[in-house]
Amino acid sequence: MTPSETLHVLADVHANFEALNVVLDDLPDDDESQIICLGDIVGYGPDPDRCLEALTDRDALLLAGNHDAAACGEMSTKYFNRLASQAAKWTQDQLSENQLATLAGLPERQRKNGLGFYHGSPRQPLTEYITSEPLAADILDDVEESKVFVGHTHKPVYFEKDRATTRAHSIKGDKELDRVNPDTPMILNPGSVGQPRDGDPRASYMTVTFNNDYTLNFRWKRLKYPIEPVQSKIREAGLPETLATRLSRGQ
Ligand code: ZN
Image (tube, rainbow, N blue to C red; front, side, top):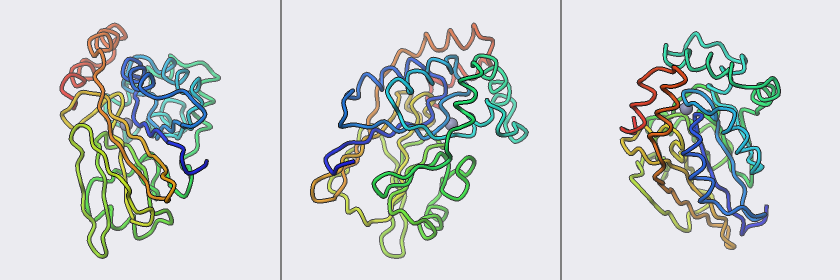
């Protein structure tokens, strides 16, 4: 990847095709930009097969999330709550052998241009939630990359380390950070495409631009998508009602 290229970082699609479609439509389909999805492509939502197909069609780099691993049987659902394990079983039945094999083969980590990509965290890629400043500080002390991208919490945020202090910055709505020093230790979360949990129901994703002077631009973006059709499909599929109602609250 040359310095002027862009990287679109998506996470936690959760089989919400309407949300994914709006995000993919917002991204240029050219050789200059690469899509990377930090896992949980499936689980909870009604369109696991279409979501997997849409991302593959756009040549997205895919990582494994805990819900992807559970749906294909790579991970036990014994630590899942009732909703999640019910949805994982349902999801498994919707996918072809080929699609299950694709999920089973997804990597738990990716590295690109010195940036690190994981679903949960570098030390526990599938399961750890980075939710606090002390935890983020610990992880930034251990990890090799200065920029770490994670999903899993479904909340857009970045943690930045300045000397001994690590601070969390929650992202509300659209946000741009320009000309960020590539050496500053940071953990960045794009938020969730298909099941946001920060009180804003709109789909969330972020874009990374590599400037010629090696600084980086980060842009978080929120997009409205048609929620009702997704809710109808969740009900028709017989998935738990909560999975439908939470989408309109963004929780
Ligand atoms: Zn998730």
